[in-house]
Image (cartoon, rainbow, N blue to C red):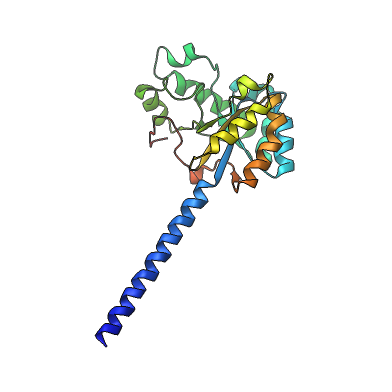
Length: 236
């Protein structure tokens, strides 16, 4: 009788272990198959085309916008939000000297001004930032401390399409860079694009490819924030 009880106990432990392992594996696979499309420097003349593509493909994206471009394109900003995309902040000047030299408050000040402009134009209050040129090496601890104290989040990326380089000369290279970037990479994936003609041209193919590979295209959600910065600073 004791042997039977012991055997049953061992079987129960084995079943539970398999179940936990399977659940963990499923959760990991689910996370690894999430991709975020992010676009910098807009909105501009190419943003409506990008929004048309996203709408047609039933996909959403995250847009990191320049303050002056928000002012100049309020209709595009409001359309972007209305269609379920997430608006992020990308500074006022996009200038290395103005942002990263002098006071460590410079970045936070520009992001706050951009936040206020977005709020005025759209009534949407976003605290998600992407600093120009990425957070390394420029966002040293003093800059990050100030940004964090203001309650901002900061996103970088883990796939760079280099579309700024190939947008006009070789747009197909943008797609190739996405495919190459995915190899061997565990998720979640954040892809860096820019609001540009060549990127818009390649976007349908890229979305189709991502889905063919089993990726779910998602939009940033502040209630489900993930850490994605080059410093691995958990505050952001």
